[in-house]
Length: 491
Image (cartoon, rainbow, N blue to C red; front, side, top):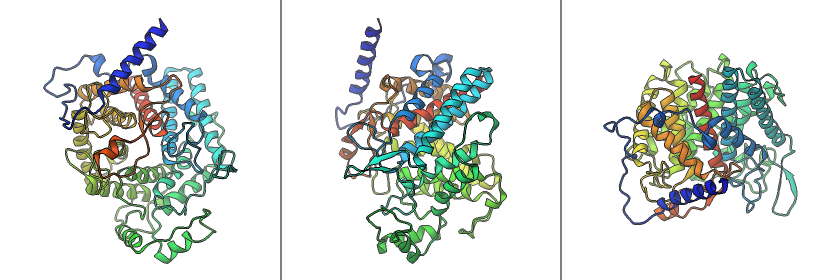
């Protein structure tokens, strides 16, 4: 019987995959599977975001996803398959999986406490300990990688002045330390052995958050990039006149010098600054910004930076129909790229929605978020998934973007920003559809590889698809966190 069920599941998954393949040049918009407001309301079960069964049950799914993340080796820009050696540093997809693991486990602890389930709480606390230890192994040099010569070396954690241009992907590493600093004094997590003091976690993470905005002169930047004191890589970065002109313009505008208007950077920059805010929000000494004298409010500097940065990205890369280009020069609605936007906007809205200092920005986010969600609903495939390019609905179904959109729908329903019947039904359908891509070991399949900007549709159509890539694992963890929060409200 079990084998028969497995065969049926495999066949169904194959049907989903086949339905996502491109069959022609036309990609007509969908109607979201009939989720329009004029459609009859779905049953309570169809639209509810509780009462999941089997693999889809969010708490057990989340625990298994965390266990899998703890046991996998360091990824290489998300890849965990045997064909790629671990990276020399913690790459940003892993950081997102770290954050998702903590978010889920914090919700799981709350769920266990609401139910008075001591065993479930102990299990969740044990997994938090596993996450703390996984991170500690990195920063103490116990986690290693092999270089091109076969030498086994400790993973690099000094990422502030690496030579490559995409530093934003490195700086988000500081968000892990900052998140730990923000939760470790909560008595709910009694029993966890924190491996450093709060001050040590905080100081380490703030190096990244502060240097992301540090308005150095060109000579100061060059000195750091070419100095062995700061840059421990063999290839040193030489800034061009064009680089400096761009950096200088963003610095003068009060933005991060790492701004480059790629859609994923919007999340990377704001996620780091928001984690810095959450770790320092109770300390008024952080309410002024030494590097942005035009800051007129008395809000936390890190939150203020994040709000300004997100507003810039909304202004510069908005495409049409509520969706966003990969970059100003790559006018394609790439699924995971839009996923960063779909997740980033509600994460910030949760913080600033009721803050009078950001009433204008909150109104902008509510409007843009609502427009984006309506568009995503329209383009959801009949299976519940989203295509690799959102508006090219007959392209292959992609799981990391789908998971991010599912999280965005769940968060909107939870906070009352989205119609619970319409978007609850769509989120439930998407979450159940993702289960067919989840392997028995909790690796998610059909994850688009790390993707730079492209100039043709073919560039996105032909991207490699990986299993267990942490871009996808992170999105799944975020969904389990949001669904567990919904369950907690139901309790």
